[in-house]
Amino acid sequence: MKDSRPTDDSSSIRRRRICPDCGGRFTTFERVQLRELTVVKRSGRRVPFDRDKLQQSVEVALRKRPVEPERVERMINGIVRQLESMGDGEVPSETVGELVMEGLKGLDDVAYVRFASVYKNFREAKDFEEILGKLAEGEGVDDLPPPPKKKRASSEQ
Image (tube, rainbow, N blue to C red):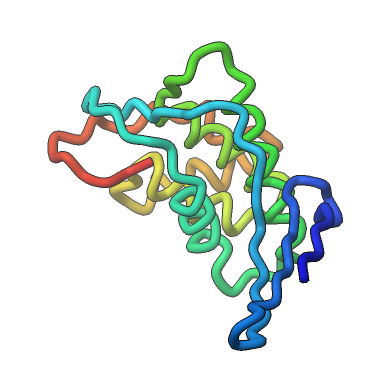
């Protein structure tokens, strides 16, 4: 037996199946993928876009914060749609980071500062003072200097 229906926000299809042999119930979620995306790292390296990695970094920033999972899911879906609708299949990692920061700013200020501190590579307390001052004034991290280029090859996104 199969049961398929769109999720509440229509971003994916939920499929439920029952195995005829063991009777086990299985649920899968399938998303429409408009195009294959490649993320271009600051080092110039190209890696396939990984939605799970994006979600994981957002969840780390939101750890122990009172934000509903549905809002997080909508934000991530929105970021992925924006990336997929860009003209090229290659997206700079800076674009992904800026979209995440923009989304987090609307969800939770603490998560926004957490993510910015890693993304912008804060090195000292004054970096936090600057972002908190700009946040209080209604500005964003976009006004801070860009993060320094990384010399080592890491698995950033």
